[in-house]
Length: 171
Picture (cartoon, rainbow, N blue to C red):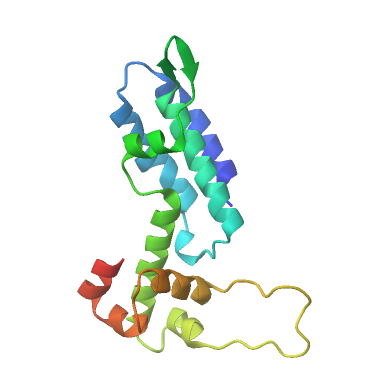
C-alpha cells in the first residue's frame, strides 16, 4: 500500500494541520486535495481485501483525528470517536472513494474499442495451466468489480456501463 508516501506527505504538512490559524474546513480541504490523492494513486486497479480496507479506514481515521484534535467534556480531554469524525468530515470514506473510482474505470474499459489492451485483458479468461497452488485463490480485479456492482443491485453491469450517463449515476 501507499501509506509510507502518505505519512511523509502528512508529516511534511503537519505544521499546517496543527496550526490554530487555519480553520478545520481548510485543513479538511488540504487533506482531500494533497494527502488523499497520494494514497489513492492507481487505486482504480487495486483489489481490496478486508485487511486492506481496514488498514485504509484506520489510516484515514488516524489522519482525521490529528486534524480535528481531542474534545473536552467535563474538564476531561478525550479522542473523538468514529461517528463524530464521519459527521465532521462529511465526505465519502477513502474505501468508498476507491471503490467508486474502480467502478468508474471499469465502465471506461467496457466502453473501449475491442482492440485496446485494457479491454483485451478485461475480456481474457486466464486459466492456470497445471496444478493450482495451495490455499485460497487470489481475489481478481473483476471479482471485486462484480462484488461492488452486486452490492449496488445492478444486474448486467457491462450493458449498463455502455451508457455513460447511466453508469455515472450508478457510480
